[in-house]
Image (cartoon, rainbow, N blue to C red; front, side, top):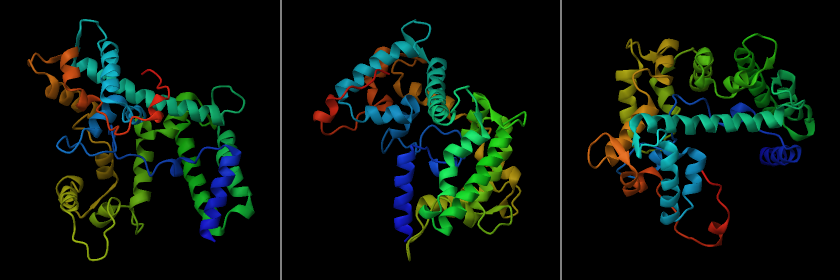
Length: 320
């Protein structure tokens, strides 16, 4: 019955051409402004670097290109990154590029959501518009949802409404484009930080005591199989919790500690990645990259996962 319910829900959403509420769209607000969902381990692959340099969606496109196509497009991108046209790319220029790429991803997602939700095309989104597009069909169509489904969507509605009101600075229940961006991507805005902490606690704190202990912290990342020994990376995360998450050593993370965890102040992912790419590619150690140095290390920047170059690769790829 539950499976049928889910299938009917998917069919209904497809027919109505609606997007998914924020908590269905992604697992949760990211703990920090990381640049990729992949581990940054160059000894295994360069997927983190690809997504950091290209953006997550464009990295998928490059995964389908031949090495020759990847290098050609990387060469064209060099001239866009070289903002002062001196034929070199500095760490600052690379940092600006990485921030541009990831800012564009956010802007594009906001644009798509606005196009779908902003029915009167005035460039802003009222709470009523958002509710009608996202939830009215889910909560009003009794035939398509069992009680569990309906209760789940009610909780999602309450959470979205709370976040929408927090993003709406003047309280008029009309989100400007910037406020709507803060609603969709609260991790990008200082004034939404408290909401990010609240939602993180709600997602991880299983016993409802308002704090996160080490077991809840680990359960958010890892579900062991029966009799499975604890992997080394889980042991490392357990120690991370003890050494660096639980700052006052009282056995759990409170709101202040969770805020520090999800938005660490000691490093900037984009800056670290820019420095990393320059360090790994700068053969003559002049602290800047020539076009040749970047192309010589093309695999780290863009790579290529393509193994079959059949007819699917003849489709048009939009120029970056």
